[in-house]
Length: 212
Image 1: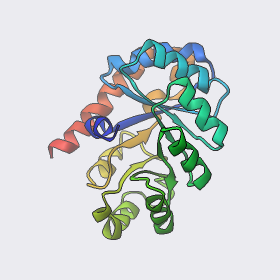
Image 2: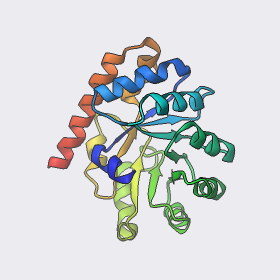
Image 3: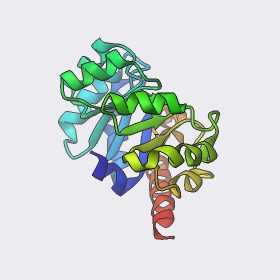
């Protein structure tokens, strides 16, 4: 999972109100060159959307986000998700994910969070809410005492095409999570061509950082 995330460095954070949008959205992302996505459990359509995409597009590295309860972790795994994420760090959630062999990235914001996550065996951590929690400067500070552990971060929250390079330039950042290329209005309007365009643009920007 980490290798594939490192290769693309973009994880679109998707909120779907209707599972009928799942397949066309997946097609739009694939057309843009992106075979990774996170579908959040913020709506009732999440599990069915994951199931549909897992069945129709097995080539997609499919994640489930906003996993706040242990039963959501189980439902995500059963639906076909191969990794899970949460905005915070709940040892019960981490334990359940480990129990059912779902790769999991808890959310962290402080040094204490990082240390607890590492003690639970988590190496890929979601830094949330990235913008409000200090952005790239906070990640630089966290890298000082923790980079040698091999920990990597996926900052999410307040990230856009305008600032993604600031995050991706940091060696401790594996990828960024963002929703601008899969904005809810674009999905609601069925504007798949614009999602594809924005995805291509984001991937090109990420690749440019890697080439610097």
